[in-house]
Image (tube, rainbow, N blue to C red; front, side, top):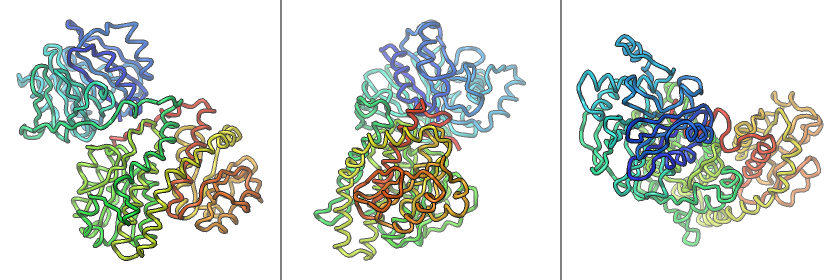
Length: 615
């Protein structure tokens, strides 16, 4: 979950590293550190807190001159967030320095053995154990740094993306990857290392994404040397041309990345179906489906695995696939899937959903499904990510970089991709007539403009947020397609405002949650005209009779709910299966404004990280 940045070349390393860490702060922000080699010694600064805290400490306590350096922003796993546990970490000799994203699971046994050999440890981290293991291998085997890293990594169990350098070889950095992402930016006799490409996009658009169990020896004036960690086989780098631009990873005048990304959803949804949806021709073209159509057509069921917001998108997809394509669907938490000995056969299709494409639990679920013979289809946002590589086929969402930790455009673009798949399968299976299929395609094309219309309610939503910003509990209710939206709305509020919130199917309210309702309980109800409308109205009346405060998301022109609710936000009318793409927008904005009013860090909520690369 941590962010790592490194540089070696002809520029000053420190400003590149610090700016890169700020761009990666979504990956972890409980502590940060930087190590810069100035030609004579390593200058190390690290601190509990954010990158801004690191800048203040580094610029007042160490020399920041030097052309070689590494930096790290941390989400704590082993050891509490403090200055000592922050990365980078030295070896006992002080010659080696490392940054690490991931978990070394067998670090305790290695630490005991190293302690017997005279090593001491300043921190509680698994990372300090790893760097000392590398040093011990270097000493006992009499090998160079690259070989020492390789031997050491064959002794550890866990996940890692690491960057290591040796003060005795200041023209070299060694990097390696298993489970956690690592990109190498290739410039003109300069190299950049990072968890993703955002720290170096303004310097080069050429990048190498390391594969699992690969390591690279990066040396100035020489070609990058790639090796397989397990057997030392030569690997050949595939240099990709990046399509990202600098504007995508800047705030662009918005106060927060989350708000920017909420407002990017019309474009993101359009980009996701652009080139795939051809309403005029009555076609959906998706290579990952077209080339593997029989797998889907012959599937006994679809299993969807995901975590967090992506799991909610999977729940929406369950309604879509079963309703439109008439294919049985099961939606599983990826974190539970692999541990309950699931029944999986070669007649199953597993769809894995992840914004980052690096979610460790989802990757583990993929590997289990493949072992059982299932066909795996990945849905993710990051090109070249681990899930994209592990899947048999898949589809990118094309949402663009999502920096805010609380996902917004990831959710709507995932639903868009999954809707396209369901519609295509419905047509191929003969469930849809050509006219009904065309109706869906035409309506889906209108969704970006309708999202724009919902965003025009932002001022009204801000007023509503001010009324409920001091609430301690909230309830979110929805039915059918909008039950998962209720779950997602509650999650957003929890994530960024720290208000306890629960999402429920509206009919389940009277089976327990109704006991919570009084004049102090805000209840957010999704009550669009399409889908169980009269039933939801009855649920609202039940809340009203118990003095609950009702905030309703309704279809434009609604009068019945308006008479009952304390506040109403309208969304344009659309087909029932497409309503989640609209109803989620007001809930995102409500969460955002409530969090801002409460003084919360919207983009970097406490205890969370964007890319969860540990189990």
